[in-house]
Length: 390
Image 1 (cartoon, rainbow, N blue to C red):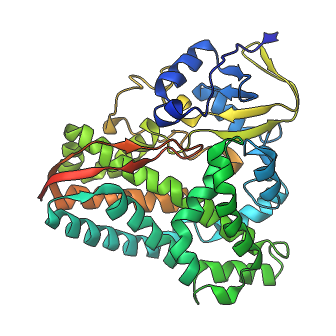
Image 2: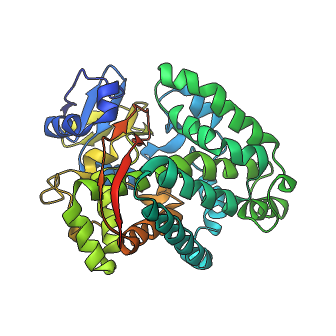
């Protein structure tokens, strides 16, 4: 057994956050686990290693999903930052309204909303992909689903972004985001059923607390996860759909000609550009990976995007190809902590792709602008030009 290979790079440097894929390739070639002293983490870089770690919650604990102690302390009592058996109880209530059966009726509404919005945008001839589509669409869906109104609805975007940003190391981005995330934490600690729309999922979570299905005082934490973990990543994914189809018009034409490719196309978008840059785990025991040891107590960094581009698992991994249908991509995680909201995210992503394929004949994109962000890799601004309605 040996120590893991080492790299002196900063995983959260601005240039890496904006475009990490050359760095991911470099780290993968060093080994399946690479020690990054600058960040004091052990980065997991290859597909099989990441999938195995995500499935082994006893060794790779979720008690340290963030890369600074303050956020991990703040998230105590949530399903995000817990392991079984506590996680099992909290997760059941979080997931209860996100099962395929529960979402079946909502799917019809989501399809209709996406179709109407894209039809309207296509008729204009040009639009801004992020504000007009990627942000507008999921914000409305989640607000209606959870029952957010008033101040909360108005703050969903900034609160959701800050909740993800503070998961990073204690850099300037994290420090500037903590006060905003604190507004969300404060609201979630005082919210009551009366603050949420009648008949909403949010009201249902409080009902679960009242009947003892979840611990007293945990309803607000669960609602926090819908807003904190579900919005920013979905926005990133929808922006990536437009950008990748704009870069690869031949792939867009494939799905236009064959709508049955919609699920495969969304899987490939998630594989090719994972919306989450890095996610933390605490290693509970000395663990050997390919001869190298990660010591007990160390912080691991799960690099979903590196695993999704691992040529050991995917042929031509750096090629965007919607016909490959990578159903086993890592963008939603894996194992007991796999994304609870992935069913809703799929409904939204599929609806947007289907609407674009049916309502848009062709388009081109302008310059794609990205801003560095600790955890969510998202486009900030993307002009869509010369839209020809179908």
